[in-house]
Length: 183
Image (cartoon, rainbow, N blue to C red; front, side, top):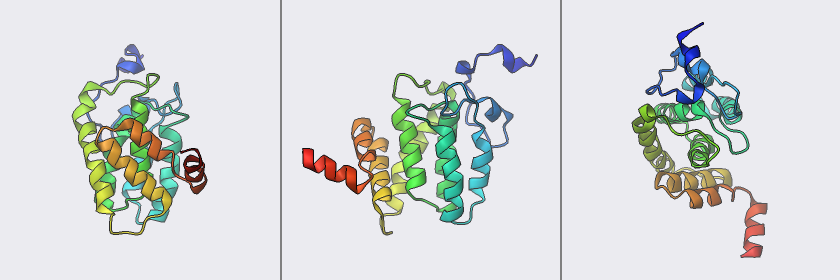
């Protein structure tokens, strides 16, 4: 029996984990009850050379870090790394803005775990930096997905979770048209 077997998963309270830390293998992802080692995908993301390569990796992260409104501790520990990686490689699009925003929005739902105390400072810094990532791509052309994700990111960074959730759901022309018809 290992030392970690004596501690329930809910009590994990590591500080920010390096991507080589074996603790990643114990963290629950977006499927409650299922472990998701996000460090593997995050390491790949660090070495992505372009948005096309990053997109494939983000698809895995979207699937592993959230599911139908559920997020887990792996989701929270991934957030500072997602921001750090995007700042470092300059690949900023709807993926990083939308995924981090979604994790933060869902963190406030009652069925998701609390943010570990040891992670609070790094996590909050990452959420504050989220708006700067969005602002950093203002001069680029945006499609609807990027616009929705960027506006959501700014709302999340400012603590406007209800507004962020509403904006995030306005990510297709059909949804916008339906909203405008009912408004």
